[in-house]
Image (tube, rainbow, N blue to C red; front, top):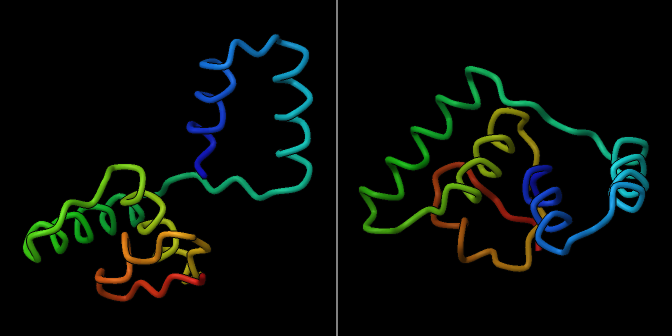
Length: 94
């Protein structure tokens, strides 16, 4: 899950400022937030292009997750491996 998706869920759910703050404090204290780099942007473009050339649609969110994992050389934990496993260099960890 991206940080943006997390915040969007809280806003959509009409969470109050105090409740949002508690969750964000927990996230910041227990998870690493990975910020995008120029290389991540290049990887996103390459992966998105690969998907298109294969006749597949890579959602923007999945593209950023895959690009981040590629940049950091880490596996992707997912329950939807088929959404990403066709991408070059991507090995979902299910």
